[in-house]
Image (tube, rainbow over all chains, first blue to last red; front, side):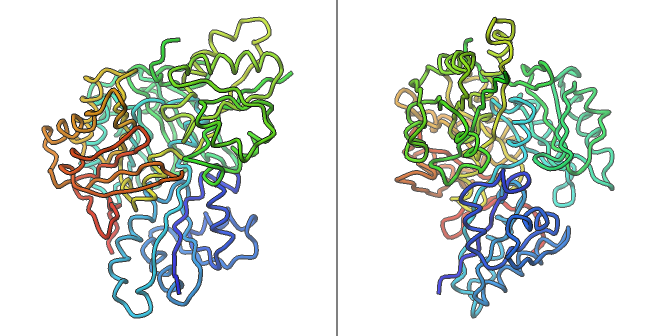
Length: 250
Length: 250
């Protein structure tokens, strides 16, 4: 019997931001496994499904539950917000697959990743076109990455003059991380007037967006539901939008 | 009268990779404007629509057509493959909007960007989890960007130890650009055994994927329909997949 676990990116919010493929995969599964908040987003659209949820920082337990349920013959969709391969569950699932591939009852399990729209792109659409040239995606969470590595990447992003999407800019324990990141970028030579912006609750109730300079971004109040955008040196603000030119002659 | 031009990312291929929102926006429009190949992808799913197409390197003419059609009262969806804001038409449309905002008959035109799954993410899903930590997206096309800038960004991406998705790795006139990019990365200190991969025709007929080392990537035959992935220094290959760990303790 074929045993496939689908690792599905559901996009930014409800059913509207999901791809047709993601919707069909979820419709065809028996059990939706996910972080409790993402399960809540899906319940109105797939009320008949069985839901198995775990909390924050229980990512590996969540992954293992999928293998156990798949071994029992259940069809599983492990759902992630945005894209499953951007700070999502695709990598830990492939890491765990190695461990399970010789375990009786688990040998036939395969993985299939279904991509979704990540916050870099769904947030960019709200702000205009902040990532319309080469760009970087960087997380400020130092739960799984050292701050030294994060700082190195912020400096490299400025040196390479990339536009940036910054994930996890703040949390209860990391109130000042965006400020620290802005200080690193300024120290690396970024203009304090560099065009920036941020979007909160992308595709969900209470969505709001703002544009500002890099020095204003340093003072901005952001939370864990915010995605931050930093333009490259040629980006500009116009009528509340953040534009990074591709370079066409107009 | 409200005049909105929707700039719509349709994802990698046909209707399956499109979001629900993109499908609804296209269904509600009168005219689909796009590059001729993308229009062909959509015709089977929206056969009743009017299509207006332009060829490659006619991007600005394509954008201007949208403004003219919108001024005539037509509901327009300007379609882009992948995401509209990743090397797409979102930025040139916002640049042109400034020009049209005082033109009689055009003053009321507004833009709305509908995001889609870009090749970095749809290709990553095929390869496993190559971008599951901080990453860069870089285009090797020097039509609109100097090679010096491209090289600077490749070096910065290696210095920052980012995973990478590389767009436009080759074309008829730029046969050796991926080789040149690999040489830049190797010169910047990347390990010749760095884990890499590439996917051709993502989500379309004839899709194929490969994994390899950076030194093998240098010799790979790729074309303009290929998206290339370079892991970070800790990425690895396993059973034909390219995995970049997020960093969870497993």
